[in-house]
Length: 518
Ligand code: GAP
Image (cartoon, rainbow, N blue to C red; front, side):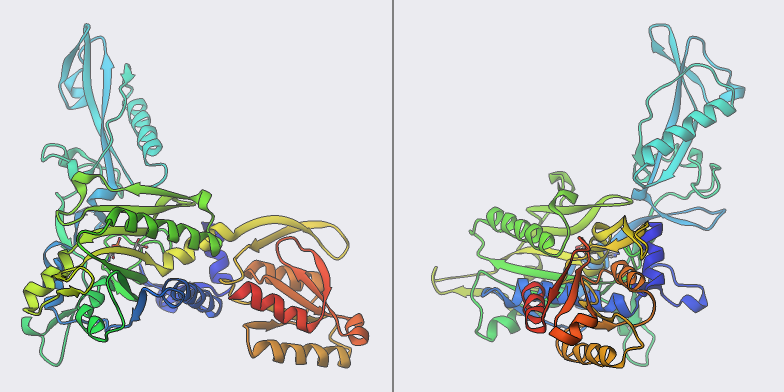
């Protein structure tokens, strides 16, 4: 991750927001290359899931909705995370991301209370068990190892003999009133400063108009989905759609995350690409749900996120909201662990029914085939643009070796991005900059390519170094205008991943780009 974060800043993909003022936790700015790549992700998604399907239409709703929207959706009452404060360090944690365990040691004799602070108790077979302290760690891909190491260290430090019993690791939402004062804060390593978890609403609040009272309260949307539900009737009334059909929307969402982390993975301002796919109440929702997951996997593969880095996590039935029939998360193997990339929820008719109740407007659909009215049910594939961006970068980042001008192998950083996502599609490089005809030819080619594609022109430095600069930002092709170009009108086409070079003329170059980029 460190190498990737540094590349992102160095080459203008992603900057910390408000960098000159020391940054703002959980907010990011996309630089010149980042904005191109982000737009490419959104365009590829829109083209493949909206424009290339007959059963999908798009929407772009406002970010701020009538506040009743969030009452109806349940966000005002339930969009909360359990928050834990450390009173000493003033750090805040999400209780479900803070893990702890009691350190239990097995001995032949009871241990002295002075040493442990807690009573030994018989555990059978003439043995005694004693809790000698507690350990805590934040969620990461090595939480369990970290807790184990901390437990062994504490046992050694206290000079306690006996066998460490296997740790029973749980998150802080399961800590009892008795445990809480004994669990050390991850910030200080000392117990006694963590508060019991309390609910914290993650919506960003603002005010509409000049008044600053309760009647003016509004929220920055925490998801784009509700904008779709509140426009369901409007879209239906345009007459273009028939169940089953879907409405898609991309746009910013805002969540006051307690613990933004892992670069852009969990941010406070991010972009979502969401679909609400409406089906009849008696339709085979499981098949529809499965089809959406499968299409997402195929699509991810088409933009360079390999199937082998993906897995599925089905939410356990007992953790689902009462209205949900099933939720599956598509997980990606990020460098910081396997984490959610894309969620697929079968939400029944909950949202439309809630809006029907709160607005007093009917959300029913008349099915002309079945000759009946119903409130449609919904399958919701929902993904963050920033997460796709990060997954695509992680999958693409490679370090290998390439020969320099003298044939000596040197380290090469290469982003093996799919051509559709690559911020720059092709680089035009005149072999030398002191041959006016050659430079003129390269400039003209650059201008013609630029009318259709994002192209980079670079004439400074050795050609090998210029290739390397393009490899690092994921440019799939470099076209070198050389001396042969002046005589036969062909160029050297160099492919990023294989580094293979071949001659190509302008017509074939345009044909190649058209085929690979759309
Ligand atoms: N409408 C359903 C919904 O919003 P979610 O699981 O909360 O569901 C959907 O979010 C997707 O949005 C996630 O799978 C993830 O890709 C992205 N996402 C959610 N919270 C995010 C955050 N704080 N930062 C970046 N992306 C986030």
